[in-house]
Image 1 (tube, one colour):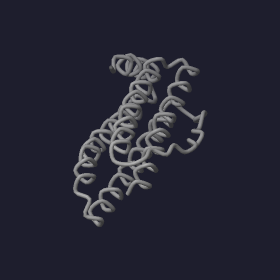
Image 2: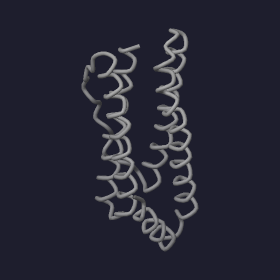
Image 3: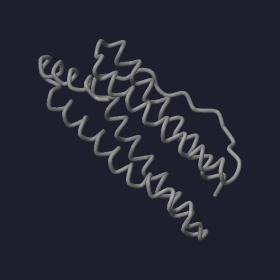
Length: 156
């Protein structure tokens, strides 16, 4: 279980790194609101990371692994959000696998700990999916994309 949790810790670090890369991309394409949305997501992923770190540290040993380098370029304003949504779906699968492992090992404490992440992933997928739909709806209009950029800039 400890090895699997350390693997998820690495996945959470990658998530943060990915969102920060997406933020940097949006800064370079003059979409500061989109960059803000991704930066807020980065900060949220760091909180998820620390929650895993603390749980592992309280119950075993944290072993940090190299973090994969995320992409730095995308083909459109929509593409990073589509990638974010796909990534959140992948993370949901990883969390569900951890729940299954904890259940199979009779580790109720870890299963209870992971329930927060199960619930959080519903929110994460919904947030990314909603952003994708908004960008798709605005994609053909520079004015609508600008309004959406302003909206995304308000995320805290």
